[in-house]
Length: 224
Ligand code: 13P
Image (spheres, helix red, strand yellow):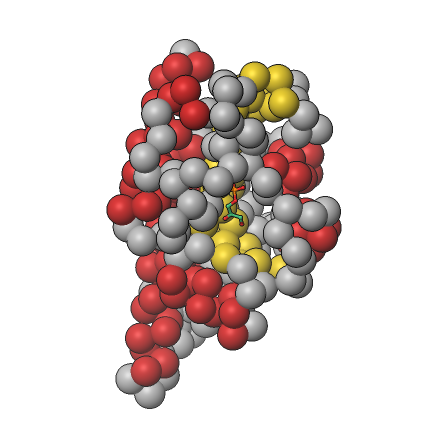
C-alpha cells in the first residue's frame, strides 16, 4: 500500500503533467485523493499545480474541513465539488479538475462531446455532457454536476473547464488526457468540414470491447 508521502509525491507529479501539457494556466486546476471515508488529500488553493512539493498538500475531512495544512496553505476553493463526487460515487478514489484548452472551448461554446468519432474515446468516455454553469467555489458547482455522476466519469463545466474522476489518481488524470484529446480531434475535424461519425453498430462493438476489458468506472453507453 502507498504511504501518504508517496501519494503526495504522486499529486505533485500529476500537477507537473497537468501544467506542462497546458491543461491549466497559472494557478488553475485542483485534484484530490481519498485516503479513507474521513480523510482526503487535496491541492492547496492559489498555487501553480506545476511546482508543488509534498508540503503543499492539505488534508480535509469528508465535509471539506481542514484536518492538516502547513502554514501558508489552504485547501482548494473547489473542495466542495470534489466532496460531492466522493459522496455520490463510492468507487471513486481521486478527482481531477483542469481547464484544458479544447475541452474548455467546448464548455464555453455550450457544446457537449457527443459524436462517436474514434474508438479510444468511445471506449474510455462515450460521450461527455456539460453541467450547467455555477460560480466557482460555491455549492452551485457541486449541485450542477450531481445529475451526471452516476453515469459519467467525465463532465464539462459550462464556461469553466472539465472534471474527471476514477478509482486512482493516475486513472482520473488519464481520463482528463483522453477527454482533451477527444475534444481536440472533434474541434479539428469540425474545422475540416465535420467528422465522419461511427455507425451505431460500430459503437456497440466498442461497448462490447469495453465490457470485455473489465474497465472500472461508469460509461453512459453501458450504465443506462
Ligand atoms: P484553487 O487554486 O482554489 O484550487 O482554484 C483553481 C481553479 O481552477 C478554480 O476553478
